[in-house]
Length: 216
Image (cartoon, rainbow, N blue to C red; front, top):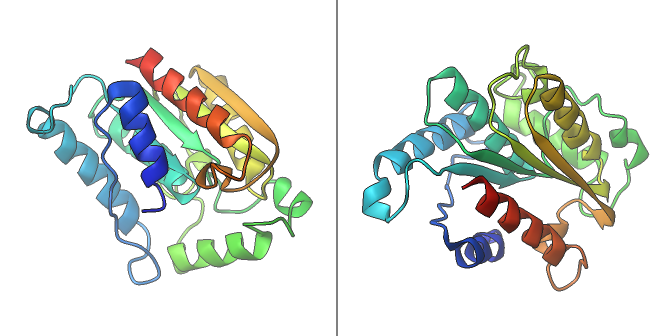
C-alpha cells in the first residue's frame, strides 16, 4: 500500500506491467530471505510474462530505501546466475553499504523521517549478526560490478544514507556501467512517499518514468 502511488503511476505513465513483491521481512525472517524472495519473484515473473501481458525481454528492477538495496542485490544476482537479463535498475535512495561507513550518516544523523539510529536498528534486525560486507547484503562491497545493467540512482540531500547511493553510482561508473544520478535538494529520505507534501516527488517520478521508457 505504501508503494501503490509509485507503482500505479509507473504502470500508467510508462504503459508497463508493474509487479510489487511481498518478500519476507526481518526480524522474523533475516537476510538473505528478502533478497532470495525478490530474485525468485523476478525469475517467476519473467517465466510467466505472457500470462501477465508483459515482454520478457524488457524487464527492470526498481526499489526505494530497503527496496533499493534489494533491487541492486537482485541485479547482482541476475548477473551472477545468468539471468534474467535486465534493461536497467532504478535505485531510489538505496542502502548499499550495511557496514555503515558513509559520511552522510554523521552529517544527517538527526534527520527527519530516517536518522542514524533508525539505520543502525534496521541493519541489525535485517542481518541478525551476519556479515554486513556480503555483496548480497551490501552491493557496494562487491569486488566486481562489471556487466550490471544501467542505473538511475536518486538520493535526497537530507538523508543519512545519501552517500550510499552516490558511492554506489561512482563504483558502477568505475566498472563501466552507465549511471544517471540525481540528488534532490532539500529533500529527506522517503520524499517519494509524500507526493502531496514533498515538491520533488513529481519530478522524481517523471525522471523514473522517462528512464524506464528510454531503456525499453
